[in-house]
Figure 1 (spheres, rainbow, N blue to C red):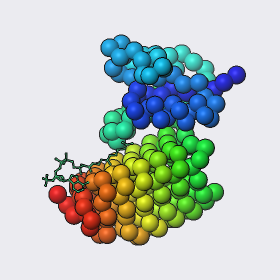
Figure 2 (cartoon, rainbow, N blue to C red):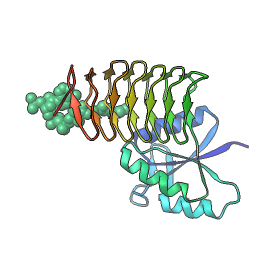
Figure 3 (cartoon, helix red, strand yellow):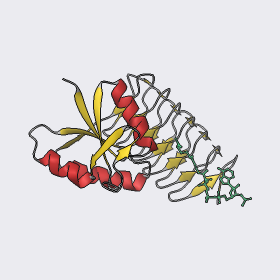
Figure 4 (cartoon, helix red, strand yellow):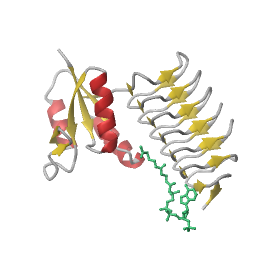
Length: 208
Ligand SMILES: CC(=O)SCCNC(=O)CCNC(=O)[C@H](O)C(C)(C)COP(=O)(O)OP(=O)(O)OC[C@H]1O[C@@H](n2cnc3c(N)ncnc32)[C@H](O)[C@@H]1OP(=O)(O)O
């Protein structure tokens, strides 16, 4: 019997998650709050809203495996909290070509995309996105619901807080701390610590 995975969020990000899930042998079922206005994403039908999924799972004996496929960090957090109160099991999904050290730890609900590398003793919190070809070097610590975009390189011992967004192609010098709710613009080079709630971009990255 194939395993079933509920994907909350019928978006471009959701499509990538569906593709990974199918490669791992899951049958995917999409849920999105735009239902019934939106009924399909590509060839996949949308089964209902997130509330519909919760109603359905609460009638089941066995918890449903779920991934929240919403790029916005705040909304991903909200939906995850809702689902955690129901009979859902938030799984960690890892693309078969990602390389994860045996000494790295990933919390529930985190997704790791193709070609990403997470090195020894790195810790990744719950509900994170480690996007395509991102490198999370040794001893990094990534807070909950943070998005590390494609081709980002975090050098050794970098700390990124929760609900931060490290933009595509950025690089961060070793032992730097980036706070919570930060936004690092695309292609930036971060060489100084960044406090909470700040947007920076450029090389070197400065607050804007
Ligand atoms: C699979 C995926 O798709 S994952 C998603 C990947 N996407 C990303 O990583 C996007 C990250 N976002 C960015 O980099 C954005 O440009 C932000 C958030 C930094 C700024 O966005 P906005 O506030 O809308 O800024 P806006 O586009 O209006 O630009 C304002 C100015 O800053 C400059 N600017 C914007 N972003 C950057 C950047 N990353 N680096 C350098 N300069 C920038 C613009 O050129 C513009 O300059 P100007 O005033 O001289 O014309």
